[in-house]
Length: 177
Image 1 (tube, rainbow, N blue to C red):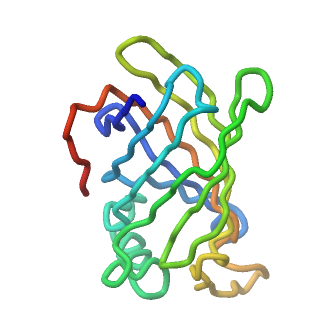
Image 2 (image 1 turned 30 degrees about the horizontal axis):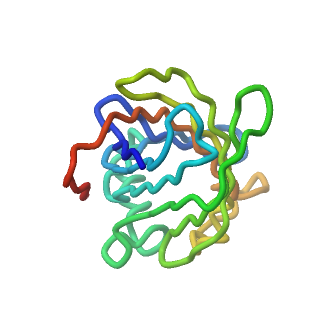
Image 3 (image 1 turned 180 degrees about the vertical axis):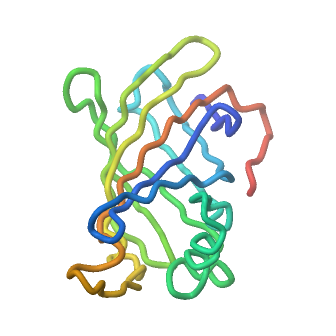
């Protein structure tokens, strides 16, 4: 079975969440790794593993990033990583794959659904658009505050959008973050 590693220099992990009922906060995670085992041209026979270093969060606001890393949200001192392992991938429609798997945040594992759109595939590697949505409260990220005008400060659903590039993994290579 072929092994392909995520090329962090050509990939991006982004998220967005409603903020104060009128705006959206966008951010990235800058430190991540992953591996695809199988056929990059036919993901239905592949498995995917992905790991994100939570401390690498970046929202263009240092105080917010520190708050997100605190015990109110991710608690990076105790839970420094988020992980995902695919369980099934099948061709959904129009060349888009539907992937389900185990997403673990703060030791809470839940089933997550992502859609994968191949962007480019050749003999050297591939790139994919990966999109999904998770409810942060299901993973213990429950902090919130009511705002005077009504509503809450942080929305529940987090949109995830990634561009993931993979290249052939070297024999006996290991991926750590």
